[in-house]
Image (tube, rainbow, N blue to C red):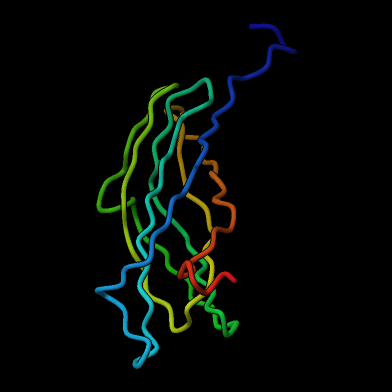
Length: 130
């Protein structure tokens, strides 16, 4: 192997779609529930596994919660280059608007850790956007 040969790089791209869960929410009780569907796509050159997650949930009031855990929805998906994994989960906040951001904690087949950043995404009731 050449000394200046670049190592193949791991890269997971994350996209998010959210929706308000009217049935699970109650404005009278300051409970607003949102589902979020996460799609994780391996756009890198090496097989990678999602081993954990770290979320920061921000309520419209500015209050923040952190959630950490192993895997995503009880799984630790192994993605070869070009493969994707999709899951849906949900969260509750105390305001009609908020946001989430975080990172997926990942590992390559060579046991090199890396993170897939999840850019902030809105949690908002459609009418609350105007």
